[in-house]
Image (cartoon, rainbow, N blue to C red):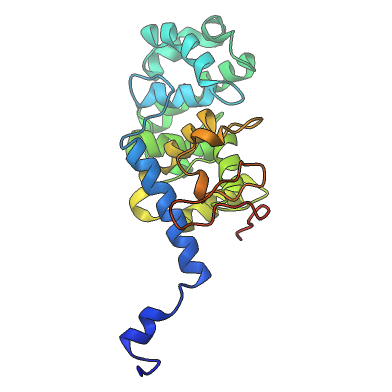
Length: 247
């Protein structure tokens, strides 16, 4: 009979709850990667500067709505200098279909002035410097860092916040709590694209009002109490047992 310290005894020990949870999270991202190996954001842009502007404009607005407005805008103003030359009134004419456009126009013009004055007209690859720009919060800074500079950070928007709490990946009452938890729990090899996978999953499958569990590729890994239950084919628990809180 093997002693408790032998490799055979260790192999027979059941996996701990922590290791099972890590395996579940790894499997979630493995499937998302397999379905979409090279995910991309849906905000249209032509360079780093126009990406920054598009993300600023997307606050409390849809990507579709922002894209409709910025297609014409970016044809005439794709640098801070050209955007600044439009002025607040000129910019308003292009973005008036976007919510909160008067405030956003002021922020974008002020942002352009700061980019020229403090950064030589270039978008900085630094979260602190980005957040110092008018209209740029942590989420916007993270999106720019991730997409433009390939920094493996996760920008938590309403979709990621919902998906993370539903699956759950991380339970959190604030965006900051969810971001911090995801930074710890998402495996390193998936962090670069995790932002996009979770946003797209929340936008098109795990919808706010009516999640489409029947076509969800990670449904058997989900513990959301509102999902449809079914028999697991993977060995992971698929039956709903409440929200499945994870600290």
